[in-house]
Amino acid sequence: MLGAGGCVRALGAAVPHSALHRPIPGCMVTIREPMMKPNLVKVSKFLSYVLRHKPEAIGLELDEGGWASVEDLLNLANTSGKNITRQTIEEVVATNDKGRFAFNADQTKIRAVQGHSRPVDLALEPIQPPDVLFHGTATRFLDSIMETGLSPQNRQHVHLSATEETALKVGQRHGKPVVLKIDTATMHGDGFKFYLADNGVWLTDEVPVGYLSKPTDPSKPST
Ligand code: HQG
Image (cartoon, rainbow, N blue to C red; front, side):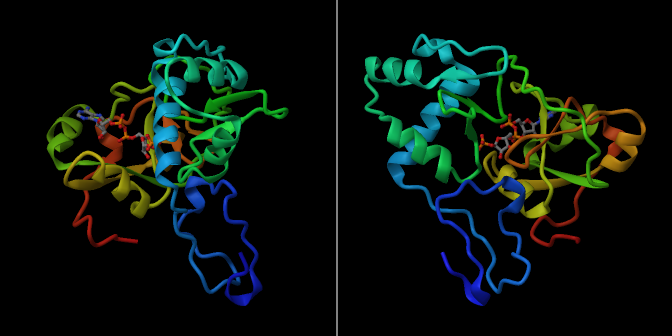
C-alpha cells in the first residue's frame, strides 16, 4: 500500500502487536488493525484452540517449543471435518490481526507465538521491559486482582500490553474494561523477568499487588 507521504506498507504482512495503531514515522497515516476475512477469523480461532490449548482435540502433537507439523495439522484438521488448505493457513499467518502464529524457517512447522495454556517453552530470553506496561481486564476482576495481584489464570503467563489503548481492547474481551498500570521498572529492578513474544505482547509470571496501580477513567488514557 502506498500511504500519504510515499510510505510503503505491505497489506497482508504480519503486523506486530506493538506496532498496531502506532503512527509510522514520516507517514500521515496510522496503522489500523487489518481486517481479517470472516473465514480466516474462523480458521484463526481453530488454530488458537489446537496450537495453544487442545492439540489432542484433533490428535495433533506439539513439540516442547509448541511447534506442530503443518502437514499433520492439515491432515488432522481435514480428517476432523475442517476444510483447511495450506494456502488458508499461510493467509492466516500473514494477515492475523495480532500476529498470533508463526512458521519456522522452512515453513514445515507452525506455532502460536503466545497465549498457551499448555506448557510450552517458547525459548524467549528475558529482556528489560519499558518502565511502564499495562494490563487490560474487566472491572469485575478488580477486587480480586487488587487483593492477590495478577496471576496467569489458565495461561502460562500474565499478558501485558505496551499501550493503554491495546490493554483497553484486551480488557473489553472480558466485560467492562479497566486498565491497570504496572511499575515494570521497579519490578524488573526487583528481579522479575519479562519476555517479549514475537507479536509484541509482553509476558511475565505474575504481578504482585505492590507494582499495580488502579486506573483513573479508562476512557481517558493518562499518557
Ligand atoms: C484476570 C488475547 C481475578 C486477568 C489478548 C484477565 C492477550 C485475575 C483474566 C491474551 C487475576 C485472564 C491474554 C486475579 C488475572 N483475580 N482475575 N488474581 N489475575 N486475572 O484471557 O490477559 O486474542 O487468560 O486480568 O490480546 O485477558 O487470545 O488473559 O482478565 O494478549 O490472541 O484473568 O489474549 O490475545 O484472561 O488475555 P486471559 P488476558 P488473543
